[in-house]
Length: 107
Image (cartoon, rainbow, N blue to C red):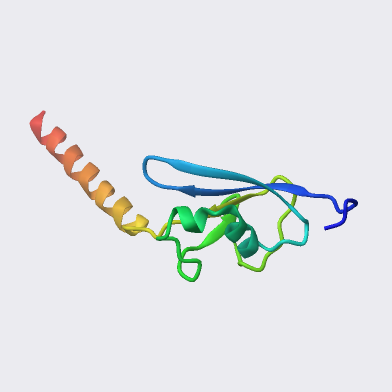
């Protein structure tokens, strides 16, 4: 890297249920997402991350591992879902319906 080449600043983020790891890096503008994640050291800290399985994004928008980033971007590594969000909403709606019926019957 020449002294004239400008660095950009990005963050790599991996969140667990009780802790969020944020790693700040200064990189060259031509560095791809996968290279940034590898340089961050997060793969060594959390061996359960598999870039072939875990989706990644920039500010909640999925991106490919060969994507380029901009100064100030936040690269997020997503954990796999343990439950289908649609199924959870359906169960909550059914429970609320039953509770409403029980409250109505109690009057």
